[in-house]
Length: 142
Image 1 (tube, rainbow, N blue to C red):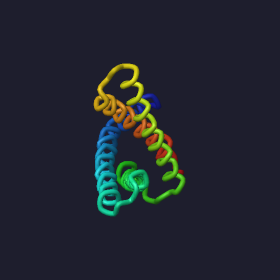
Image 2 (cartoon, rainbow, N blue to C red):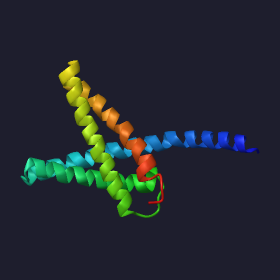
Image 3 (cartoon, rainbow, N blue to C red):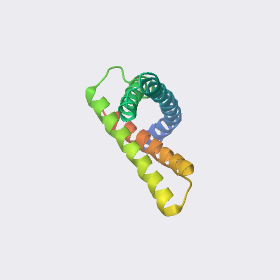
């Protein structure tokens, strides 16, 4: 097989592997949302922790949950890396900022209903989180 054919074949294989990876990433994120909600309700409603503190803890535990599942299952890494975990936290904070800014801009300047604007922000953050995580967090052997 010549070099051009090998490149094309490699591209096809990578693209076919991408869809299951995106699916796993979405599933992990959905489960992380459940973790976030369960921890938030437990801390705030049952243990009467201040709302902001409860939300911060819930968010970080969901990020840690998502990191572990994405590390082992979505991206197939065998070991843990503090560097990768820190990168994933940065990516997630960037996604959260993107959601908030998108929500605010669409509501304030485009007159979009806040629920729809929030969904657009979440989808934007999902694209951001997957793309940056795939390339920066898990794209190298960090």
